[in-house]
Amino acid sequence: MKARVLRFLGLALLAGLWLWAAVPKIANPGAFYDAILGFRLIPEPVAVAAALYLPWLEFAIALGLLWPRLRRGSLVLTAGLMIVFGCALAAAWSAGLDLSCGCFGASGEKTVLPLAILRNLCLLVLSLLLLRFPAPPSRTSSS
View 1 (cartoon, rainbow, N blue to C red):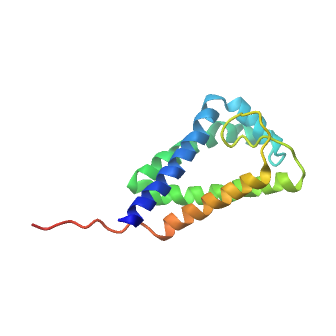
View 2: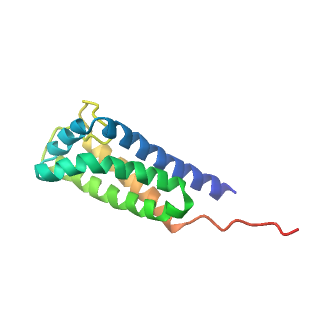
View 3: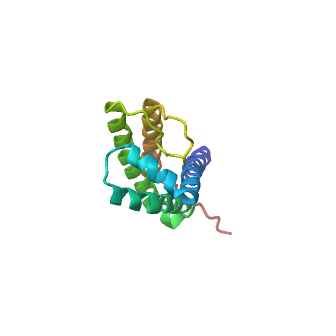
C-alpha cells in the first residue's frame, strides 16, 4: 500500500512539473526561443524547432505519465530529457554563462545553474526508480 502511494506521488510530481514547464512555453514560444539561444549550443533553425515542439512534447509526457499504457514510454522520455537538459545546464555553467534557463517559461530571473543541475539529477533518479520498480499487479478478489 505504501509503495503504491509513493509511486502515485512520484508520478503526480513528474506530471505536474512537466505541465508547469510546458504551459508557459506553449503560450510564449518566442521567450522560450530566446532562452534556448542563450545556451549557445544549437543553431537558430534548430532552436526555432525546439521552441515550437519541445513544449508540446513536455505536455504529452505529462499526460502520458497519467495514462498507464503510456507511462513507461513517458518515464523513458523523462529520463532522457533530464540527461539532455542536465548536460545543457552543465555546459552553460562550465562556460560561465549567466542566463535564464527557460525551464518553466520566461521568468526573466537568472538561473542558479548548479541548483538546476541538481534538480534535474533528482528528477532523473525519480524517473529511473519509477521505471525500475513498476506498479505491482492489482489484486482482484474472486468471490
